[in-house]
Length: 120
View (cartoon, rainbow, N blue to C red):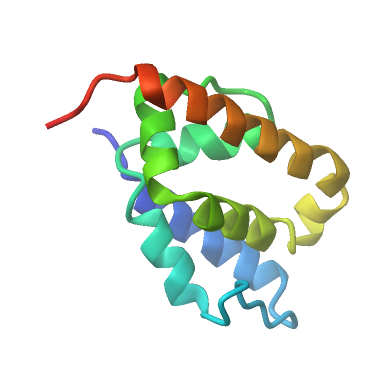
């Protein structure tokens, strides 16, 4: 059974929130975690997991269909979600690698999204 990107993100967000409980994070627009949850709802199926693992571990490939969902989510959502995740001590030590990688993923997805078929 396919898990939604939203569920995956919420699980990840719970872990990150637990690890960085002392950090109060807000996105550039001054929103709270509701903003990130709203962003995550735009990544259905396993796309959220594929994007996460591609950026943070390079262990999964991102399909053109998932790229289309990422681009539809928007660059600010993408950057905010990555920014939130790297607040965790587990991920912050590799921020100098993962932030540029997330930008590469975004740029690649912008190109791939143009080739992805339109989903119903």
